[in-house]
Image 1: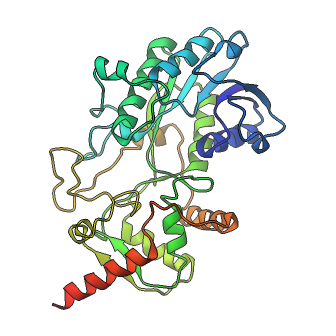
Image 2: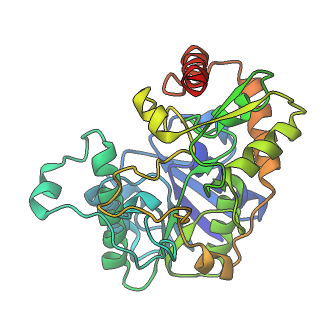
Image 3: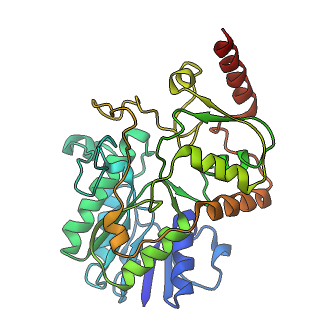
Length: 345
């Protein structure tokens, strides 16, 4: 297949390109020309789609994969440029389009989504910075552009937390590094709380599989296939690194009082009283994405221990510090000390 990848040199896009090459497809990249050293032997079309998409028009593509669309009008320009020249437009969206994750049956692809009014949408310029408040709604409106313009030839993939090598956020890298360190580990919230994520390589390989099969529609892409609890994740991760350090569970109310930022500063933790909606889950009720539809279409998952090890090995070779957003050692030690003091009173 001849595949045009929009983006293609960072994290998700990079892995999608690698998966496509591995399957023997011809890949062309369309981006601003940064990071050429990543794929020096591939065909490149250098340009900025916010300014000119005519340079990708006129050539026949078996499929187009958009890995980095954030504003609907930017995506519209890309789709309109190729709509006559491709049979499938794949858009990598996000699970952040959903209004909340409180649902006893888990969130399927028909769950309510976040939207913006026409007035607010028109007020957001294509060059404006994306904020946590606008990220999800803008991605949803991008999805709608794909479906409107492609008329039955659109594939939308909504991943949850994407992890593994080249992740610039360090959200999963935090745990890969922390579980290898021989000192007391702060664990957030309830031990039997369910967690979800997807290895970027599993996502990339499945994306190419979907493109090869010409599958259309919307799909949640998150793992694992079976329920994974935070306690299991930490215990097996500790065994992986032969780490005998103690794990101390700290309540989410205490973490909030210590001003620990969920998800970013303490990755994989979304408080069960977090204001994602007006509803609150029942005690011990699972929350998260329903991945059944994607699994039926061939989505598979490698063992999370493999993901942890590969992330740790990659980060070790990077020779850098974690993102400043991650919980630092001094703050972690301070919280653990206060927690133990409170427990002894």
